Image 1 (cartoon, rainbow, N blue to C red):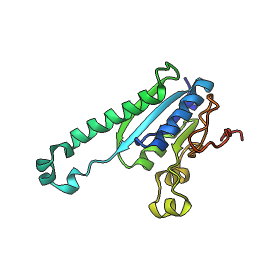
Image 2 (cartoon, one colour):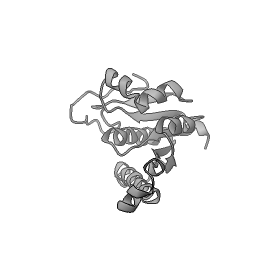
Image 3 (cartoon, rainbow, N blue to C red):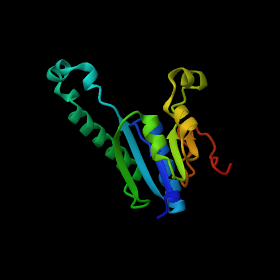
Length: 169
């Protein structure tokens, strides 16, 4: 399968990222494309020193990594809903989310992200991951807004926005 038949999706456990993954799965079925669900995480154990880990062992990097891995797999299973297509690869990568996602977007057909709907000012102040990815990605970037209808279902999400194909209009 050519890398151009690859959809890369940023997953962080939020409803916005689940919405992006559902969109990418639907699009992957239509295109016959693989979907790579990628979750980035950072360990802050070095910054906190050994005391917090001794007091709260669940903060140890290996425990955090395992928790993130379980979260990623739970989201992927939930969004797949028992479907066997498209082919999905889940990957947990240590690093800063925008950096990891833009690196993984090289050669992909598309990088798909969810929009949490904080607005332009909040995103600019917070330097959102989506905004950084838009500026640095090595492929087209699709940001799935809240209220986007799930492709193929015809059912809009809670705020009942009409379905519009974000790629073709």
